[in-house]
Image (tube, rainbow over all chains, first blue to last red; front, top):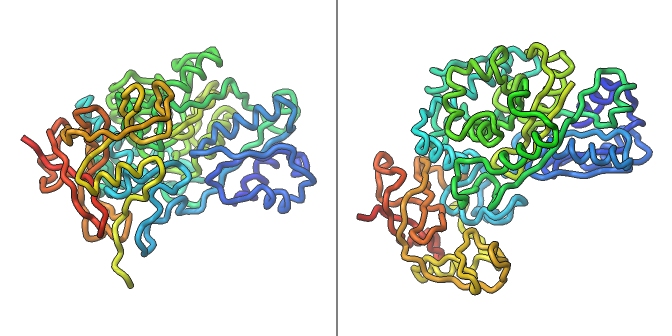
Length: 359
Length: 136
């Protein structure tokens, strides 16, 4: 899948495999660089790296730094996901992985039965509902919007499978207040983009998409979703910091953004991200998404216009970045009319990264 | 096949004092030995004064439910017979927040702000965990 995705990106750009001299992927990705080199018959990679926590935007950012400093000319950025990724919990033996995952200590969580990202996120989601007296259906509208977009996207796993809010509310609870339909699709999939300088991009086959700004953020007292010792656990600190940096350096405001593609492994965390990124004030995202009118194409802030992780596939936002490029080139399956500026968020409730892109 | 045991802590150099104290029925939290800042999760350095000297004072064991969830999907084979079960985030009276479970409490009674007190439960031979009960 990685080879297919990278090859498709190379051909789309009007390049040849030989033009690729840099590679950037994810620490979670099982494909080693030398497999790519040998498969494409590349002579040499001048630049390669990996980003942690599903940070697709961070991977694009690293590639941009490489081409800007002359360390590479054309960097392929990719992610391929073979389900299930990460921990496989259904093995039969005493669990001894607690505290031994690459993403930090789990030893204060696993022994109490708090085991997966949906479990971790449920604690944040419950606090959000309590603090703002919000209705849990707010989470459902995120899924409804993503599935609506996915249903109209022929590449999506959930193509022609839109859902209603009533169907959402009948879905089984995974970890209250979260339901099965709050959690991302478990899927196989791969996505890739090519990053090069603006000058070179203008000579290539397709209209370029420009990086206005790239930023990363951790916020204080960060963990992997279990950010439970922050003063306000329902506020996405990492989003706040990276968005402040992004908008300042790009010279635009949230009001200038025509669409957002937000890491949606858990619907509830999209609400927190909309607030942390500055699109809604704290506590107001639950009302903002009601009915999904504002967050579907045709509304004021279309969200995950390809379906995202809830409606297209789980490719840790490399698919969100590809979709942002399609929107800005005007060839998306569900096109936002006259889209000029888009924001992508990679990682959510973990050390995260963002991109502001323009056509 | 041997009986599948539940997840147990895997103590590290940073946190073994916490788990050892549980086996003495004491809830301790890491504290800077220089500026007295409490910190959880344990880590090598004080985030305020950057001292690496630590101590482990015993907490009152009292706190309130800051958030919670009721888990229905058994993500580990040992938990298949236990679902649904609750997980609570307890804010200790001293400030730090810890993840635990609330014992002997019907799901519908669990609510944010509920006062709780620690109890120690042996979950595996020689392994005690800090759990909580509703307090008055």
